[in-house]
Length: 309
Image 1: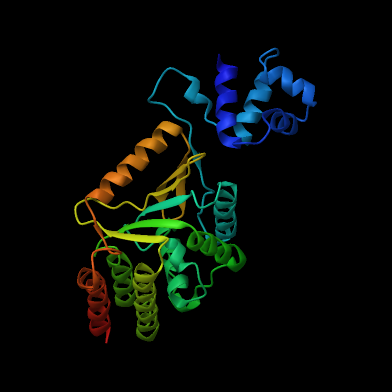
Image 2: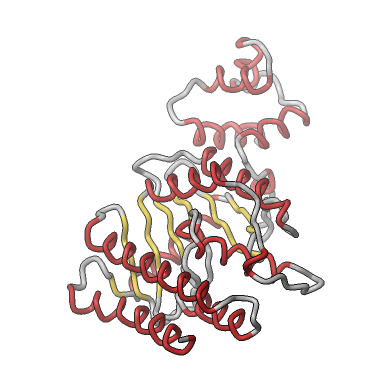
């Protein structure tokens, strides 16, 4: 029974590809040997079942009777700047292993501005990494922002941002989404770690980013933005695809727990759709509501600029 269930999951993952060819390639066995296993005339060994489950990212716990236990993965741990390059490379590999197509939709619950937007060669991007590194620093030894140099991960970060921008994306925001970075700018300015001229440049770049998102909301049919005033946003990211979905739950600024369990992903999609029903679409609600929404963020940025000035 369990072998048949495993084969059913593999069929779902591979779509129209030949099941025998897939099994033969993954296990490095002959076509006939693969056929004996797919026809249930021979059993998978324990090692073969594990290899197939790992290759196709199938949680073996789904074959247990309990509905309350699932297997998860996590992204690479980041404790210092030396871990950033592997982190971005790992995230890029997650994207590359997903079935990216017109059937893919990414849902993002934006407690903070989605980090994909700040993967760029700007002072704003550098400041976000600076803040994350300080928050992960157990010794809390702060360097002035001017002295902070992040490692060169530009090829991976550019490709990661590009892949995100190419997908159909649904983001849930509220007027507090921009608040955390403004609080961070204020904190580091007041401690003297961030100079006034640096802070003002970051605020200008933040304004330009919000303007870009506003323009994207008006003109990009693959991008949907919702204002959610009722629910607590969480920075959860959900990659939905009919063949294979993935749910990413943040554990810290640079860490995610990854879940591809079918039942959990279905529940997650239903939850995001429920939130959307209780949200206001910025794409279809009209110019007035859209301007009100974005002007709230512009005013927050302007107010901090006046305060620092």
